[in-house]
Image (cartoon, rainbow, N blue to C red; front, side, top):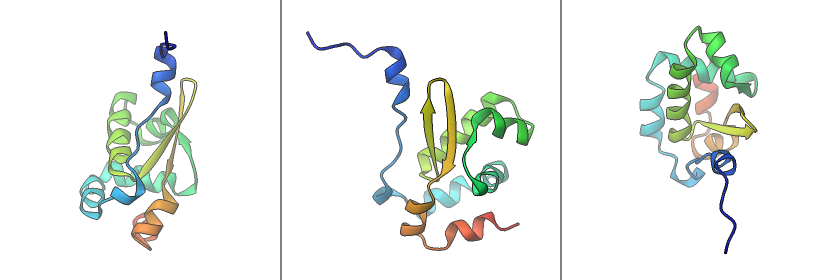
Length: 109
């Protein structure tokens, strides 16, 4: 009988769209929300934890999770799991390859 995946290992697999499927219209629609654009700007300097982002934005963790999920599903961010801790970072290389200069424009203040 094959081993059964434990709930913990199932949680570690966080789905991300492949770079080849990133769509500019979807990304721009997702970043049309000022809070999500601010998240991208906060991530411009590097990865941050989910809680750190929620604290920096002054929003509840559930609200932060919702916006982070939308950014991940659009292909803007990558979530890395380390146990129960989640680190969020921009998909710089993928975005730069598909849409050169886009992130530079988005993170300007």
